[in-house]
Each structure stands twice: as structure tokens, then as C-alpha cells.
Length: 332
Length: 282
Image 1 (tube, each protein chain N blue to C red):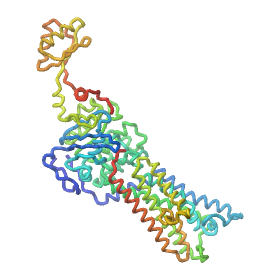
Image 2 (image 1 turned 45 degrees about the vertical axis):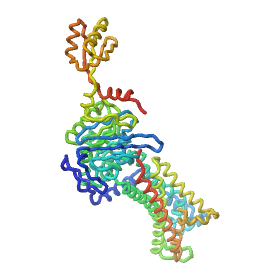
Image 3 (image 1 turned 60 degrees about the vertical axis):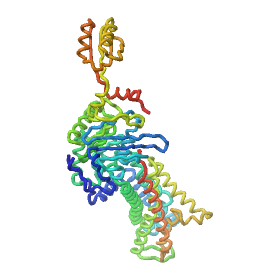
Image 4 (image 1 turned 180 degrees about the vertical axis):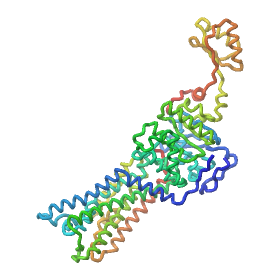
């Protein structure tokens, strides 16, 4: 990250504090209260380390998009501060935003222009882009998202998935230090979703920081190195993904035959497992510090038919439910 | 990671202006509007040509009666007929759409995150809308001259005082009329831009702009409002006729241009203060 340009940042670019040098995004008490009185974002402190793939997750209406709009200088915070690549937004936008590729609340282009002409329009409006390489960069970006064949088609003829891809191509028109992708998998089929995940992975491997928001946890959970969970305008939790999921308590569950359910539950209780629950042929309990192999041995020793056994750490969705007491698909 | 250049390049403003002009003047709806305006002199010329040997020859409001005698007057008569409604309508559509159209399509948020500074974007949008207004007036003028020459021939102009000036002088005077009418539209463009920053619904901004012009025109007719009439947007629009006097009253023409400058200053400032601070949530 030593080649980060610093020279030409126009006035308003705050000096980069040393503690912030390794943060691509930092917000402090970032708050947005709309004129209606509704608080969309309630004082959040985002910390997105450079090089991270930060999964910004939460149900629809939890404040993700408003946060992203404030990060990009589209919406003014009611209070609090947002720093993007070390610059205070929105004042430092002119120096910061050329280094940021963004997809905000779905793609939007001129319907009667072709995909390539739409990219040309965006490139022409970028005061810092080199017009001599515009065509080449547009074609490369289209190639990268698999749209090369449809480059000369008017945007209005694109399918939802193609529109989404063109949005990604626009974000990739120039090399970026940070990509902010708001719901990039919306409207994509499973194959398209996989391609987006691979693209994010590939960009991250080259050192690009990626903030990717989604209301579908499972879709992005696997590519994220870091996670922030939003609900009702609050940032409930953020940090290293492995740490967060590791913090959850592992639960063991086993399948047995109908007449052995009681015996299995007794064995688990006897071993010191807590929260023993039975449901049909399944018995489950919090594993605690007991090694799973000890449990299976004890079960076999007690003559319990062991038809299946697994140990699961909670995934993010379960952590979310634990934190909020609500399902993830709640839209408020 | 590759270096991302963040220094603005020379000529970047010109590049954006070119892109905006291509967008505005290449858009099919706007081309249809321009073609529609060009039809006015063509139709008017045709009608007058077909009826010129009848008892109706030489009749009609404004300058229409003079067209059959001199094709140059087809330009003036067409502008006269378009000024109350057709010109404000087409210019209201183009300028009301400037920001609101991008907002409603969602492209505004992507322009701003490119980033384009908001003041710069507003200026470029103003250039686009002004270019469209200029094209509208020019389209009427060019088609008017060509059709006028074809139907009736061009000759020296007989002025309002009865004096006839040579053709060259006449063409200059008609050109001055066209320029004056074009400049008279600048206030309306500023009004349209301002309304355009208020809404994400382009039709609303267009309607408000056109209504502003029409209401000004109506109020201008009321003798009871004579005290405020000189401040109305449309008050000096028809003063282009000064160029058809032997000695144009430059004072009146100056007032007309100053009035437009005032409307541009006021509504330009309003548009700027609104657009540079508004939350973009479309």
C-alpha cells in the first residue's frame, strides 16, 4: 500500500492519522436521522481493515445502504464522521472517490445507450481518468464481468443479471483500492452469484479492500474475512469472521433409534453436556469442553444405536438470531 | 496494487461537456422535439404558400401577413408563434429533465461517486440545457430561412417604419432577432434547472417550468399587475421586434437581457445551493 497516491488530494482531504493508515473505512458515531424522524443509522463505528473482505450484513431496511450512501458522500450524516481511505467524507471525495469503485442500491444506467456507451459516459465524467485508454479499459471491464458479447446492446435490453454485471464493470473501470458493493448478487442466478464471489476473491487477492453488503448471509459468508452485522440501524457486531463464529458455542447432535432416545440423552447429561434437547430421533446438546470422540465412545459403550453424529459451530445466521432474537429475513 | 491517478486532467471538463452534449442532443426524445419545432416554419410556409393568391393573403397576427412578401419574415413569424407555448414547452422538457432525469434513472448517484463535483455537474447540465435551447431556436431559424427562400424568395426587409433596408442588412437584423430570442430563453433554462434539483420526478420539474413561463405570460397581460410586469420572465420576450425598427431601442433590449440575467442569477443560485447540499437518496 506504499504506492498510495497522496500528492494531488484536493483541499479537504484530512491528514491520514497513523492509527488509521491500516483502515480503509472508519466511521465514528455515524448517524442518519431522516427528516421524517426515522433513524436509519444509529451511531455506528465501522472498522474495515485494508485488504479485508468485509461482509456488511443485515436484513433489508437495517441501514446498510444509508451507511454506504454516507460513506460515498451522497447523503450527509446527521452526526458522526466517516473516513474513506483516510479522507474525511464528503469533503475529501474528489481525492478519494477515484480510488473507490462503487455499486450502490443496484445498477443504474441510461436505458437507450449501449453498455459500452454507458461506461464511456461514466469514464468521461471522471476528471482523473485517461481518455486515451477509455475504450480499452471499458472493454476489459466488460470482459471481466462476462458482458463482452453484449457490449453493443442497449442497456434496456439487458436482463437483470446483465444489468448487475454492467454495474460491476463500472466499478472496475479503473484499478481501485476499495470496492463498495451494495447487494452485488441481487438478481443473479446461482452461477452468477458464484462468479461474483470469485471476482471478489480475485480482487481481494490482489490487495483490493472490498466492502460487500448483503441481506443474504449465506451468499457472502464464505468470501468474507471480516463481518459487520447491522440490525435496526445499529452495528451489533463486527470483527474477524473466524473469531466471531469461533466465539459461538459448538453443539453436538446425534440420530438414534426411537427406543434409544432416552438412553442417549442420559449419556449426554452424564458426560456433563448442557442444554440437552430431544426432537424425534435427534438428541442435541451444547458440547462445552467435552471432546466429541469421548461422547461417541460413551454412547457406543452404553449400547446406544448411533445412526449419525455431528458437531456444528453456529454460523453467522445463528449468531445473528442469538443477538437479536429474530429471524434474519425480518424487514423493518 | 496499481497506482490510481487522482489529479484532475487538463481538458476533463471539456470531455464531460462533450459527453453531456452527445447525451442531450443524441437523445431521441430531444431530436423529436427539435424536428417538431422545425415543422412550424415548414407548415406555416406551406399554408401561406398555398393560400397566397386568395383573399386571405397578407392577413394573420404578428408578422404572418408579411411572409408571402418576403421569405425572411417566415423566421420571425415562426418565432412569434412558438414563443408563447412551443418554445417554453420544449425548453422546459430539456431543462427540467437535466438533474431530475438522472436522479430518477439512478444515474445521478453513479455520476456523483465517479466523482463529479456537484457544482461542476450542475454547470455541465446547464451547458447541455442551454445548448438544447440554442438548438431549438436555431432549428426554427434555419428551416424558416430555407423554407422562406424556397416558397417566397428573400429580399430586403421593409421595417416597421416603412423604410426598406437591403437584404444583407435584413439578414443581420433577422439573425439579431434569433440571438435575442435565444438569450430570452436563458432565464427559463435556469428556472428549469432549479426545479430539476428539487425532485426525482422529471415530469414534475418539466411541468413546473412550463407553467412558470405560461403564468408569467398570463400575468403580463393584466393591467392591474403592471407594477410587477417588468420583472416577469416573459415581459421582454416579444421585444425582439425592436430589431425591425430603423433605430432599435437599445434601452428596451438591454432591459430584456438584464431581466434574463437576473432570473439566471436568482434561479442559478437557488439551484446551486439546493443541489450542492441535497441528500441523494434516489
